[in-house]
Length: 435
Image (cartoon, rainbow, N blue to C red):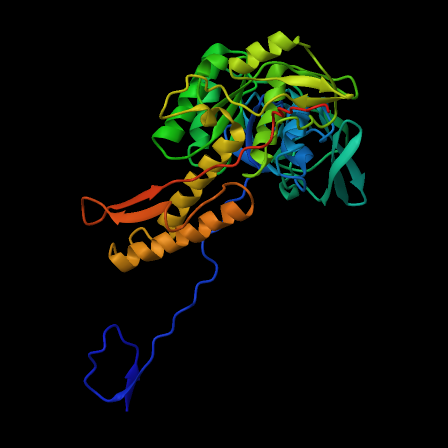
């Protein structure tokens, strides 16, 4: 008896033809947030590439400093709210080197931090113990018979030929830092074109760099379909929903001053970490004791109307006055909703998720027939139901608010969708009648 699988019911021989398929219960889901990109001027570490850093990352191996160091302050601030930070070292430097006998030691990365490494070589019977030290801490130890047996570690590399000789300390020297400029930031933006993140920080006071950031974000949002936001300092003239402009800095509980440029790192992490159903309005700056600049009520109103992100003191803490971006030139087609970052997160998440749903599950895979469009519409309805369940949108009616149609060409699909993004309560107007 014949058997197998079938595409159509046109078999000639008698037999059993069985197709197996999955009942896909996974479907589309709301995309995760929490990744911020951070450019940094560092004295050690890989340059010109995005380095993912989370709470389990050994930053000393990557950047040559402990996580609590002053040099990694911006990373620390960003990571207070971001679950992952894409660190980009803006500029490489000159590698430090040192020699002892026939052994040459070279810092793994360029930069002035390489000058702080010391390599000690001690005889141990017929072998040699070679140790790498930094700031009085032993980082690495190897036991070898000659130079050829040495392996590079996370901090230095070895070269040379012949036997080792005892060395009390080969001190590396002549390493120097590179100087970041607008070209460095443009390379950072280029690296971000294919990365996965929600927000980037631009901790620079250079107006040309800020404008370059605006142009980059506009291109990504409008032409590439990637809905990201950037955080700059003192640049409300951007007038764009993809740009957040920080007006003032803060003072941390340990007395550390965070300028508005430095605060872009925290705001980027805070914005990336905020979920689609959350607002940062009146949320506290973690670890801040006061603001760097205080403003009067009228000054705050002026700043808000200009689209500036303002930190204010509140009951011994520092909070965000309003979770807004720089967009202020409202029109009937693009109203005030685009100025509120919570609402922008809803719109951006929907845009990014629907793009992923279509590309991963439908593009080139499902026919543009009534059945195919019904399948796509059902998946969108399921996805929008999830947004409504978590309070990101409200009052969505699957019968009235969405339609999926065939476009003007055989491969085109048109979706008409109406949603009501949910904002947070921010203003209370109360009338009390005294009887």
